[in-house]
Length: 160
Image (spheres, rainbow, N blue to C red):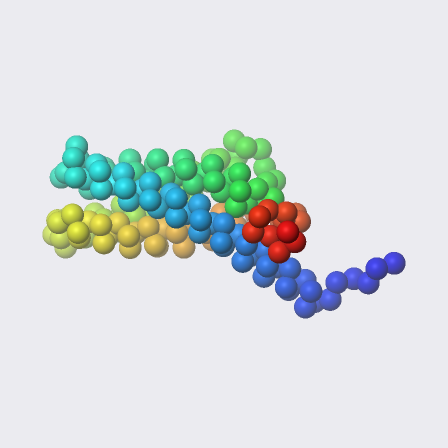
C-alpha cells in the first residue's frame, strides 16, 4: 500500500497547478489583449473616433469570445464540472463585470477627466484591462471553472 502524499507534496502539487494555470491564462489573455487593444484602436481611429466607450464594448466582446475558447479548451480544461451553457453563462457574466470595469476607467478618463486623446484613451484602456484581468482570474478559478483540476498532461505540465 503506497504512503499518502505528505503535506509538502500536496502543497507542491497545488502550487504547480496554479503556476501552470497562470501561465496558460497569461498566454490566452495575451492573445485576447492583442485582439482587444488592436480592435479598440482600429475602431477608435476610424468609425468610432469620438465614441471610445462604444469601441471598448465592441473590442472587449470580440476578445471575450477569443478568451472563452482559449480558457475553456486549454487553460481550465481540466476543471469542467458544469454543463457548457451554465459555464458559458458564468464566463460571460464574469467578463461583463470586467468589461464594466474597463469601460468605467475609459469613461472616467475621457468624460470626467476630459483626457480625450487617443493616447489617454489607450492608457485608460490598459489600466481597465489590468484591473479586469485581476478580477477575471480570480472569478474563473473560483466560480466559472471551480472544479479541482485533474492530472494535467498539457505541454506546460511538469509531467511531460
